[in-house]
Length: 263
Image (cartoon, rainbow, N blue to C red):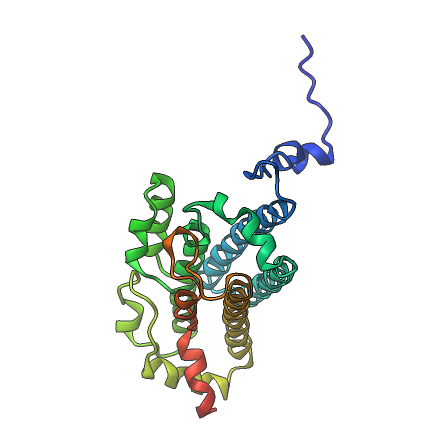
């Protein structure tokens, strides 16, 4: 029996046979544009996974006081957001008629059911406990519940500032982290002060703004892509489509936006 390990190659390392077998159009005969639709959404999920991996890393770096490394990690996530926006450009090459040719095959499937996207929102501080009930799968539910009850990236950043001697209110540091991040005047006062005296901390704040802006840019482009494709029709999975998506346009780190007019 030969127990020698097969030499590493590109196909094995990237698991290409498995990966390339996962694009399975449901239309019969296959509609040409369904393949594109599947691939773009699958790649989105891969980038969501990468973003969560990096945000978790940045949060850990904040907790350990490593601001410079956290800034580099946040820059990486912002770059991923730019790639995600670019992928919407690809979807917009599909006309409404081309999408309608296979839309009925989606049945109740909807991007609203992306557990990783909800994890990403929760990780950044945009938490809503009500979303847990929309994920009955035990593994997805467990992951979302864990993220609901753990400190967000913003919570970790405020602890980082407190560790540097900034007077972040204790009530903010001890807040219920399962609640969404809300603007706080006392935190804003601290941020205004550091913007005038601490270039290193300002760099971190601006990297967080970059990330927040990138996430909102993706949301906006997604809204316009959906509007361009289906207009004001209801979305798949009984969602309200564009009408619902518009309500999601709000910042993850509101204090960093509130202070702009005071600087």
